[in-house]
Every structure is written in C-alpha cells, then in structure tokens.
Length: 57
Picture 1 (cartoon, rainbow, N blue to C red):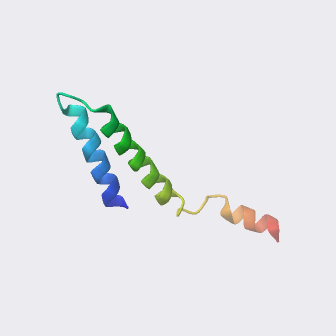
Picture 2: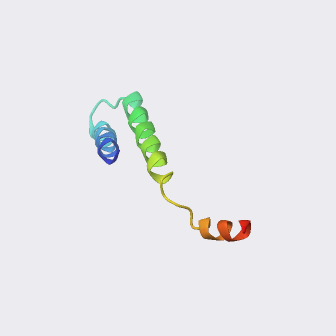
Picture 3: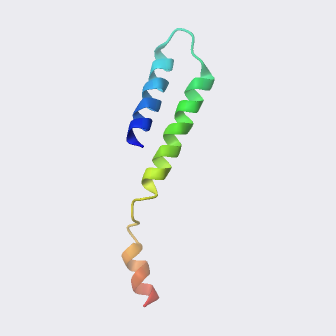
C-alpha cells in the first residue's frame, strides 16, 4: 500500500514539473494517494476507543 502511495506521488510530482501538464494523470494520482491514505488510516485505532468501551460497561 505504501509503495503504491509513493508511486502515485512520484507520478503527480513528475507531471507537475513537465512542460505539458496532463491534468487527468495528476487527478488520478491524487485520487489513488487519497484512497491509500484512507485504507491505511482505517487501521489506526481511535484515541477515544478506551472511553467508548468504559461507557458501555
């Protein structure tokens, strides 16, 4: 997942510096990056998880 994010950012940065910018390639690279970030952040536990578990008991 992280490798895919690095590749997407690399493509977006390369397109940004090229003479003839292709906006579609940049948008696709950013969308791929954001989707990867969402998948990685969904695995991170919430800070309030302990508090929510205490409220249930």
